[in-house]
Amino acid sequence: MVALSPEPDFAESIPNITIPAGREATMPCVVDNLGVFRVAWIKVDTQTVLTIHNHVVTHNSRISIVHNGHRNWDLHIRNIKEDDRGFYMCQINSSPMKHRLGYMEVVVPPDIINHDTSSDAVVLEGGNVMLVCRASGYPPPQISWRREDGEHITLRSNGKEKIKVFKIEGEVLNMTKLTRKHMGAYLCIASNGIPPSVSKRIWLQVNFEPLLKVPNQLVGAPINTEVTLECYVEASPKSVNYWTRENGEILITSDKYQVYELENVYKVHMKLTIRYLESKDYGGYSCIVKNSMGEAEQSIRLHELELPTSRHRTESEESHVSFRIEEHFTSNDTTTGYKTLDSRKNLYVDGMDNTVHAGEEIKTPTRKLSPEPDREIMKPVQKRPPNITAGAVPSNAFQYHWLLDLILVLFITSQLSAAV
Image (tube, rainbow, N blue to C red; front, side, top):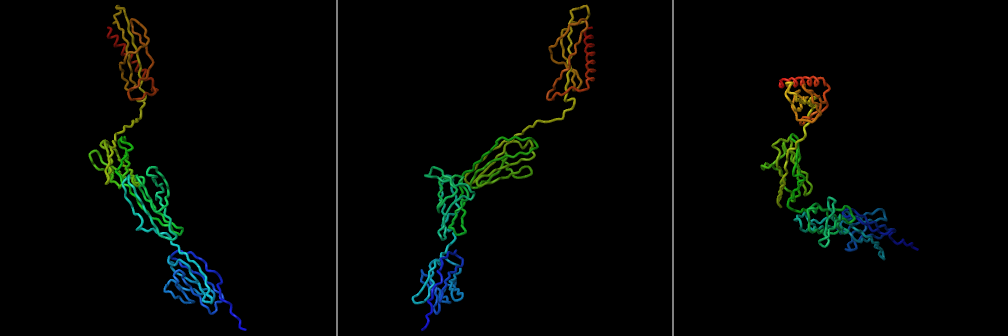
């Protein structure tokens, strides 16, 4: 009796695999008891025989067979392509024929189709725009839109109600009644779960006439200081910006002037710093902007600002002391030889220059004395000269007493001489 050899059979099933395009793939086939039989690999959808036993029969150079020992007959494919997607069959040429199937899924990362996708767009303010983005890949990519700066996208529902969103799904982005706030970079993002996701940057420019805003049209600054004048510009396309004087002189950066700008999309902050202010620097200045849509101009008037002056006060400036002396003469006695006088005078000793000044009439109590005039010395009072702050009375009061006595003597002598 002759012993029969065991029938060949597959030791395990062929797994389904998923491979990104461009990579390498191996589909295993393990056979027991192969004996004199042979193993072949066939691509099912095209009915193409790829390998028979140790030989590659297809003309595809990316395909090879890996035979490890007696059991393994692995199909190896390099640089996987989308065309490689499908069912593969490992077959034993026994009778009856035996086979196993495995599926190879080929995935493809997304890729933007440039010729089907919008490029940068220029639209007038108030107009409409439609941006389109298409991408290839497997599985088919999902398209979304967002702004590069992270700001929301403003849409209109039924052409009226505004809707603000941060992300929009779909190949087409429709925006109507555009304003300058729509201006910026938009990202079309394609993703299908196979890294990496890809995006395309599309710049949307909204053109409009220049707009100028001046926060302060009247600016004051003292002599010998510096001052900065400011203008705020909104313009698209980008404008030509400059400063001028009233006489039309265009100002540029120099030792006298510093001209600089801070830009942000369609906004520009214009600044003009004027150093070492002189009298001739005061007057009118203009900021002017021009672009293909139009031009604008605003004026700023610079005037001199007078600051209060400070001065060091001396002891004599801090104190301006006046002494008031009152003389009242009355006499009805003609036998005395005195002239009849009925007058009241104020005399002031100026503490600043030690001079005597006649003042205005004041009302104080008096006494009638005859024939000799009596004198009543009043308390010293402080008199504040113009623009000088009165201070304390000097501590050296002796000088004022001496002056007072001298003045009294001179005054009485002059009155007596006049009476004689």
